[in-house]
Image 1 (cartoon, rainbow, N blue to C red):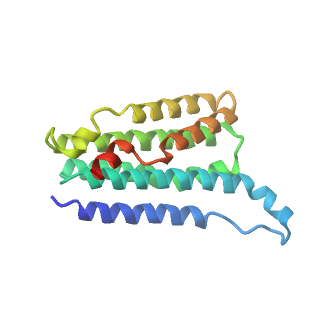
Image 2 (cartoon, rainbow, N blue to C red; image 1 turned 180 degrees about the horizontal axis):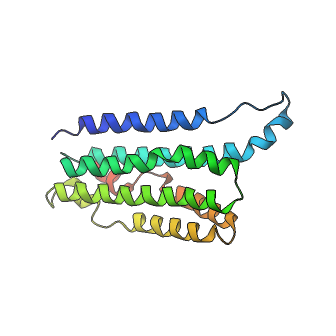
Length: 191
């Protein structure tokens, strides 16, 4: 089965997710710079989520670039990933409106954790679809970075019930870890 439609559909969903997030940004009530201050948490949550969506898009692109074909299981694994990513605008908005509250911070992390798990499942589905000498199998033999990421999300969710600032720190750390596209794939695709 060709992967072209999967890539096109996924790119469209990523674009819609980013569009929905930016549409949630509201114009301040006043016309001076002080009117922007109450919007800082909303903007910070937007920036963090934009970075995460960008990271997923970039790594998704590299993942599918390394794949030769897809099957029904890969299509469903990809749909599973897109489902969790589609919830990012909702949790971003809640987080921005209630930045210090436990439940928005925890739910934000849970959605990111579930998206991370779904990405891991998609990668495993692609590996299962290819022979062991293929580029994607060689690139994804180990996924310590993905498992570390899930561990950081787990810790961030738990810490949101202790101090939400610790959760934010772990979310930022996770974004920094993934900011550079997955070198396992990128290095093998460029050879």
